[in-house]
Image (cartoon, rainbow, N blue to C red; front, side, top):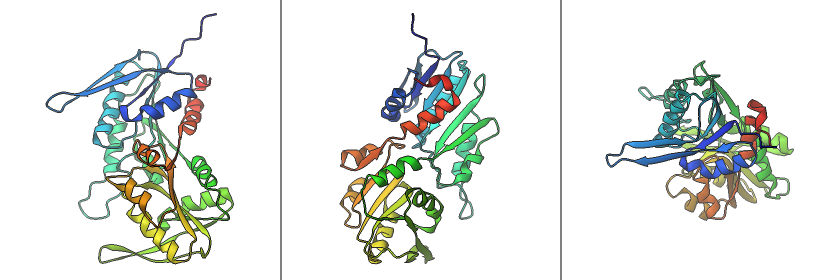
Length: 314
C-alpha cells in the first residue's frame, strides 16, 4: 500500500533550522526549504521550495531582529497568496516584547506596531493562527487583530524539568524582581518549593535593590526570568540573594537572547553557579557551546500543532 501523502508543509527561516528539525521529528510533515540571500544593494531575496497550494503550512521563525521579522512577514504573505489551505506561524520568541507600553512621552510601542503588521498577513483559505511563547507581558497576545488567531504557549514544563535537573536540596525559586513574581509562584507551586523575589526602587533614573521577601539563608536559589539579554538585572539580583545568605544561585530562563558578550560574562560570573534555558532563540546555541544546559521546546510546539491539526500525529 502506498504511503499516505503528507498534507502539511513545514518551513523555517534560516536561524530556526535546528528547532525545525527537532519539531519535524515529532510531526507527520514534509520539510520544505526557504531560500534566502541578499542582493548587492542589501535587498533580501526569498524563495519557498515546496508545494503550497491547498496544503496546511507551518512557518517557524521567531522575530529575533528586524531582518528575521521581515523574513517571517514576507514569507507568510507569500504562503497565503500562494493558496495555502491554512497557515500557522510559530514564533517561539516575539521581539520587542519589552516595548509593550510607553513609559515616557513619545516612545513607540513597537510590540503593538509589530503585532499590527503580522495581523495584516493575508488570510489563508481557512485562516491564520499565530503561536507565541512566554511573552514578556501576557497582554501582548491581545494586540493582534481579530483576523489572526493567537495562542500563548507556556514553557513552564521545560523550565521545571531544567530546575529538577539541577538536583538541589530544597531550593528557593526566585525572581529577578517583583514583576516576575506571578510566573515564579506558578513554577514554585508546581515544584513544591518556596518562592521569593527582590524589591526594587528607582533612584536617579537607576534601579536599586532594597531587599528580599523570603529567608534564603543557607539555601540554594534558582532564579527564573522570561528572558536574559545582557544579564545585568540577573547578576544584580543574584548578588542580592547571595548577600542575604543564599548558598548558591542558579538562573533558568525561557528566552536566551544573550546579546553581545552576555554568554561569556554570565558563564564567568562568580554570582552564578549555572545558567540554563530553552531553544526559543537561536542564540541559545552560544550557551550550549559554552557548556550551559539548553532544553528544547519542540515537544510543547508539537503538542500545540497537533491540537490544531490532529492528522500531524505520527
